[in-house]
Length: 504
Image 1: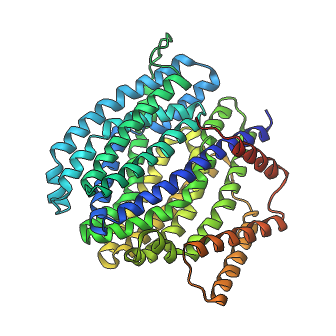
Image 2 (image 1 turned 90 degrees about the horizontal axis):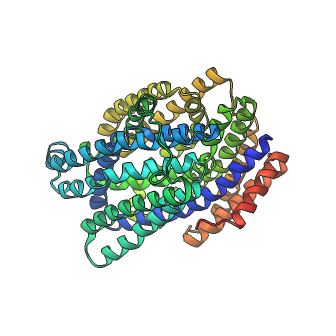
Image 3 (image 1 turned 45 degrees about the vertical axis):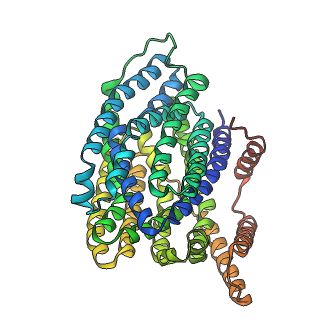
C-alpha cells in the first residue's frame, strides 16, 4: 500500500479527532471557567483532589493502556482474534482488582491524606467521593484502548471527549445554579465517569469487537502483557509526577488559592495538545501494523509527515497564546486569575517543545522499548521534583512553571535522541524554518496593528485578531512553499472527511 494511503488514513482519523478534541477543549475550558467562578480556593481544593485520584488511577490501570493498543493493533494485522480477546481479558484480570483495592484504601485513608499532608480538612469528603471513580476509570480506559487498537477512534471521541465533557458542563452549571457548589460538582464528576464507562463497554461490544459474548476462546496473554506494561505504570506515575507535582507542592508550600490560579494557566497551555492528539490518534496503531509487516520505509515517511504537521499547526497556537496571554486569562476566568500570566507563558513554551515528543515516543513503543521510556520518564520526574522543591518554595507558581517546562523539554530531548539512535528515524526537518519565519512575521504584524490602533483586546477583538494572525501565517507559509503535493493530498482528505464527519 502506498504511503500516501496511510497518510490519508491518518488525516481522516485526525479530522474526526480534531473536531472532537476542539469541541472537548472548548467545553473543558468552559468547565474550568465555571469552576473558577467558585473561587480560587475551592477550585484549588478540587484540583488537589483530582491530582490525587489521577495518581491512583495510573496504578489502577497498571500502565495497560499503551500495551493494549500495541498488542491489539499487532494482532489485528496478524488477524489473530483469539489473542485480541486474550489481551482484553488479561487486562481486566490485572486492572480491575487493583482499582477496587485502591478505591477502598483511598476512602479509608482520606482523612490522613487531607490533614497530615495538605493540612486541609475540607479535602476529606472530596477524596472519599472521587475515590469511587477508580474502578470505572480503569474499565473505561481498557475499553477505549481496545477501540483505538481497532482504529475506531471516532467512538472514543464521541464518548470521552464530547458526551462526558458535555454532561459535566451542563450538570455542573445546574448544581452550581441550584447552590450546591463544590459538593454538587464532585457528585456530577463521579456520575459522568460512570456513564462514560457504561457507554465505552456498549460501543466496544456492539460496534467494534463483541468480546463478551463471542464464541472465540481467548488466548490469555497475562504474563506477556504484564511484563510489557509494567514499565508504563512506573512511566505513567512519573508522567503524572511531572504534570501534577507542581500543583501538589504549591498546595503544600503555598495556598489553595495559588493552586487555583496555577491550574487555569495549566489547561490553557494544554491547548497545545489538541493538534498532536488529533494527528497521533491513529499513528501508533498504523505504524505498529506496518511494523508487523516489516514496512520500515513507510514508517519513516509517515513519521516525517506527522511531525511536520504537528509543528506547522501547533506553532501558530503557541504564538497566539504568547500574544494574548493576559487577555485569555481575563476573558475566560476573570481578573483574579491574570496573575497566572507568567506561569502561562513559561508553560506554553514547555508544552510547545513537548508536543513534538509524540512521534519518537510512539516509535519506541512500536519496537517495545518500554523500559527505555520508563528511564527517560524517571529522569524527567526526578528533575521535576527537585526543581519544584527548590523553585516553588522560593518563587511560588512561577517556580512550578519553570520546573515543569524544563522537565518536559528534557524528556523530549532524551526521547528524540533515543529513538533516532535505535531506528535512524529523524522526523525533524529544515522545513520547520518556513513555519517559524511565517509565525514570527505574523506575530509582529498583529502586535504592531494592536499597538497602532491602541485598542483594548476584548472577546470580539481577540477573535478577529486571531483570525487575522492565522490568515497571515498560512498565506506566508503557502508563499514560502511550505506545502508539497503530499501535504495538499492530506489536506484534501482531511477536508473531505471533515465535511461528511459522522460520530453517531
